[in-house]
Length: 233
Image (cartoon, rainbow, N blue to C red; front, side, top):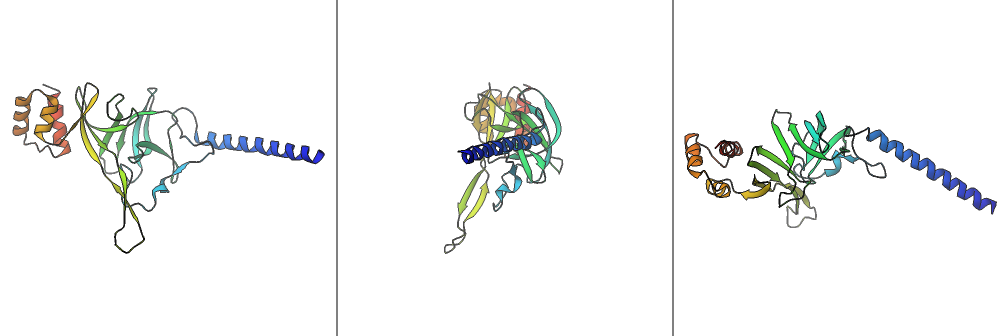
């Protein structure tokens, strides 16, 4: 009986110590509102090397980038070191070395500045009618009507050679373009006919703008210019 009581007491002490240790580990990563990164109940943190062996990158930028992040509570953090995972559609921040975790408050939007100086803004569009409220979209043109791009990356698995047992896992881009009209996504092709049909008005003015500025709507920047012009009409 005494032996059983000693065993139970020892197990209880071990459980308390383990719980405290886990709480301390979690606390070391979650340092207050929107300043740290989330870990799971076991205190595990994601590693950037999780995707080792893939051909191509699951991230918007393969390298760490700086971003200004706006959170759902309205708070903002400048120049956070981040990676946007387009496979999981989540923004991760660097914790240490190759370790990363999600922010401890939901992210509303963020603007990434890549190493080459390229700037890209991403935002959620709740109630968009096609994707969940947590989906991020790259905003190419903002205004009453927005032009957004969605790259819903996926992984394709295949064998390069007929007789090989080795499977190649490759990241595949799945890029679509949408106009956000009255809060809803309207999918468009990158051509005049599709865009003008979605907008439904000002076609004469848009035709003149395309011609006078020699716009190529297959180009993201030119397509964005057209939507920016539409918002001024």
